[in-house]
Image (tube, rainbow, N blue to C red; front, top):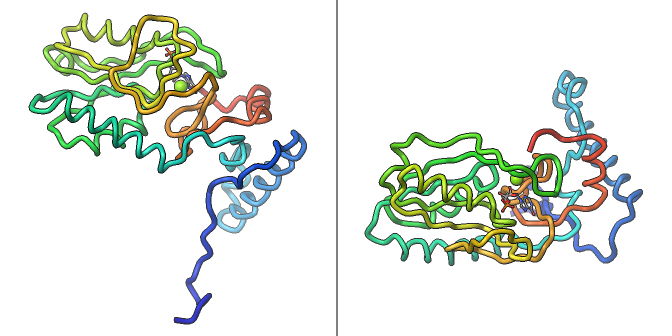
Length: 248
Ligand code: IMP
Ligand code: MG
């Protein structure tokens, strides 16, 4: 077959290139401005009405990442291991995976597809971080109906065990509402910041005390859609403080 023929596309990796030295703030800003300009041009070709109304900033989320801590392949290996643990723990029993929104949605959906047992899925919504990288008050915004809790064996799944307050409060509440048992399962464990006496029953990765984004974890509501786990550039944090992206 003729190479480079019609319909042939060049694959470009969505990941940023390996970084030899950190970019300066002005280099970062220039790259962001360039990617915004390219995205605007693309939109202009498609639909000029959208262009006029769309607020455009941080168009390309990969540009804001300084370091990739875990690639998508590494993440899936860790999830395979934990899925096998969970399968052994609940073999022969029916149980409910209770995912903590919003952060655990990506992890929970990859996890349950690797656990070949009869299980149900339910959600609880809690937020302890607002528009920043520091811990705030815990709000429990949504609990499932008691019928989904009382008498059930629950696997409480969250994105990260940081201070541990979220998981501790939710576990206590679920037991008070009549759950038969509650085990905890997290994608990440940051033991350096633990403020309560809680260890996860299952954890995919232990990380150091760094604020991370991607694979469901957010900063000011953004970056959950990154397929890997990364550390944000300082410039992106500063930019969001002056022009907030939205709710966490
Ligand atoms: P904890 O109650 O302090 O354990 O906080 C748990 C919640 O804080 C998690 O569900 C996350 O939403 C958020 N969180 C903690 N550390 C990080 C981080 O490094 N990146 C993004 N979110 C984080
Ligand atoms: Mg969060």
